[in-house]
Image: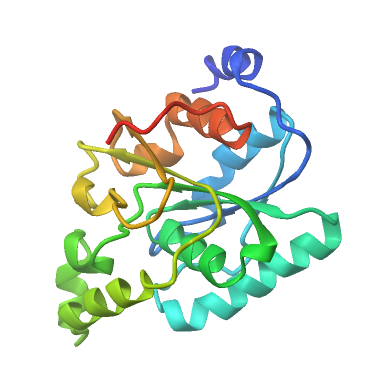
Length: 212
C-alpha cells in the first residue's frame, strides 16, 4: 500500500478542500478508515472521522448523533458535507442524506446493504441470536424508501464482497444513483488503493456512468 500511495496521489483528481465525513462499518471504528481518510486529505479533501466510537449497529441511537456530527461539521466549515460510508456506515449516511439533505452535498457508499438491512449480510445470524426480527427490519428499510433521497449517490459494490450480498447493494429505488463495481473483499473496500482512487474520483465528480 505504501509503495503505491505516491502514484495514487499523483493520479487521483484533486479535492476542493471541502469536508468529507467517513463513517465506519458495523463493529468497527475510525481506526478502520484511517488510511482512506489520510489518502483523501493527501489529495485535497478535509476528511474527518465520525468520532462516535465503535459502530454498535443500533441505528435509532446512532442516527441523531451522526446527524449532529454532520451539522457540526457544516457549521464549522460553512460548507455542505460529503459523506462516505462503509457497510452499515453507508446505510447510515444514506439516512442522514434522506432526512437532512440541507447538510449533504454528495454520498458515496462502499458495500452498503441498501436492501434488507442486516438480513442479507454475514451478520444476520448474530442479529437473530440477539432477538432481532430481520423480516421486520427489512420491511422498515423498505418503508423508508417511500421518502426519496435527493442528494447525489454513488454506490460502490463488489461481487466478491464476502460479507454483504452484492445484490443487496444495488439501489433500484433512488433516482439517479450510480453504481460502480470493483474487485475487492468487504474489508478491502477501506484498504484497496484502487477503491481509494475511485472514491477520490467520485468525490471530485468525475465518476463513471452506472454499471450495475
